[in-house]
Amino acid sequence: MAIKSLSIRIDENLLHKLHTVSDYEGRSANSQINILIRDCIEKFEKEHGEIEIKDNN
Image (cartoon, rainbow, N blue to C red):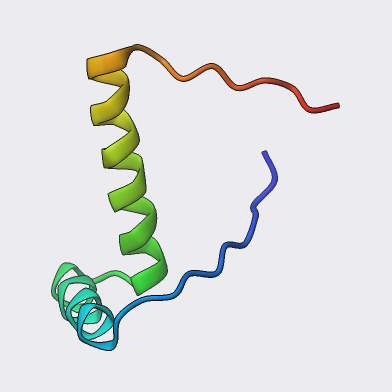
């Protein structure tokens, strides 16, 4: 699986709070965001079924 990059715009206060949480958890902000995204997708799939990934090749 390839690792892709994603840029986001985020409110300065929200970014500061993200760094506070990730520091508390002993993670980088990037790792914390990956965990939050993974948890969000797991919750979605529990409610709506597995998301099918289509091959774009």
